[in-house]
Each structure stands twice: as structure tokens, then as C-alpha cells.
Image (cartoon, rainbow, N blue to C red; front, side, top):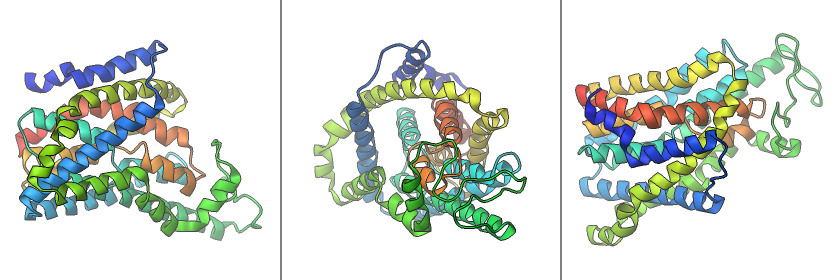
Length: 358
């Protein structure tokens, strides 16, 4: 890794993230008001969506764009399947499905940070990368629901019980009946209402989720706006972007510091998985992207998407669609371990390798 790559550690954006980590570690009273955090998150999604739409309108949907989107969907399906196969040997099938979906989906904040890093190194990424970000959100959720439904159906066939009772696991331990959670504080009525909706209900929830709508809507608006109208948005969406990203990552550092404390309750195998799975996803993306002949910018961002894990959309959906899984596991792994790894180490590492391959 060259000096340019190592300079990521002195980037103000990363240093503010580290400051948040340190403040949280020493239990400082430093905090960002929730309303400000929500505004910053919405701002970043609006900015990256609008700029992606502008870039897409300028270049059009090229063959490279179609290729990237195809690879994005392929990766978004392959990673949950691969992750589930590995995880189900060591944890419950429901935990395996939720964790696999978490790593099959993407982190928009990691993508935003990577986009800024790539641009600062003089490499351009096409607007189709934002489309790829949007397309990779949903397949993992669908895969998780299908896997969990499959597991439930197998257990019902293996050990049918009255509808009011829990379903016995293979080893004799009773799993929660539908509508209850294991180690979660979701009200039973809320979970039982969510489960019967099946895949269609989860899809509707995913597609109407606020962050998804804002990102997709901003992408369309950016593409529909001309270059002149786009310039009028520059003071808000470009000039302020890096400063507000640094402020947001300061808050993320505080959140991650609190989440890291939960790592002590996670099996060592899952701690290792939280680091190794992103590297495996990155390797898959690097191989496929290199074969497809992607540019350094596109290859880096595709790799970041494959290596990231969702800590907003998928955990929220999994909590209702797979109530048997432990939220403390999949949320802590993605937010407390994978996110800081990618922000500090992963992004410059993926960019360096993409630079050698592309």
C-alpha cells in the first residue's frame, strides 16, 4: 500500500470518525442531536443520488452501465447464499439467514465515503454506480425471507405442532412460535402481524422505505435535470458535501463505539466472519469487475458495495421478517465491526488493488 493510500488515515473525514470512536470509548458526553443526524443522513443520500443522476444523464446508459448493474445483482444474490452456507454450520438457520442478508445488502454511508475517496484520488465513477447501489438493496432482503420461510417449512414438516405452540428445533429446544422474538423487545402482536405478509409485504416495506425512496427519487431528479439546473444545486450538494460527511461520520463514530461494547457477547466465529466476509465479497467483485474491464473508479465502488453490510434497511426488515434471529448479532457485526473496518482500512485497500487490476 503506497503513501497515497495511507494518507486516507489523515483525511479529515476519517479523523472525525476516529474522534467519534475515541469520544465514545471514553464515555464522553459528546453527542449529536438525533434530528441533526437524521438530516445529515438524508442530505448525504440526496447528494449522492442527485450527483449520480447527473452523471448518468451526461453519459447515458452505456454497455458498461448495463454490465455493472448485472454484476451488482449477481453479487447481491451470491453473497447471501454463500454466507448462509457458511453460517448455518455454526449458528441457527434463522441467525444465518439474517446475517447473510445483512452482508448481501449494502451500506450507503460506506458508498458515500468511498465515492468521496475515489474522487479525491482523481478517478471518476459512472452514475450507474448509484443505480447499482439502489439495485443491491433489495435482493438480499428477498433471499433472507425466502431462506427463513424455507427453514420454517422444513421444521413444520419435521415436527408438526398445534398452531399455538412453539416449533421444536432439531435438538429439542423450543423455538419461538410465529409472532415472538428471541432476545428482542418487539411486541408479539407487531411481529405476528408482519410475518404473514411474506415476501410481498417485505418487498412493499423495502420499496417504500424512506431512504430508498429518497435515494431513488434524487437519482431520477438528477437525471431529469439539465446541466444548468444541476449547477444551481452545486453550492448545497457539492460545496458542503465533505464537511457534512465529516460531521456525520463523527456521529457514526460515537454510535459505533457504543455498538462495539456488544461484541463481547458475540461468538468469536462471528467476529471473524464480520471481517472475512467483506474481504470475500470484495474478492468476488474484484474478479468479476476485472474480467468485465471496469475502470478504477467503477471497480473500487463495486468492490466497496460487495464488501459492505447493511445496518439500517436489512436489520429493520429482518427484525420483523425473521423475528427468530437475534438483532444483537447481525446489527453489532455490521455496525460495530464491518463498518469501521471498511471506513478505515477497506476503502483504501480496495482502491489500491483496483488500481493494480484495472
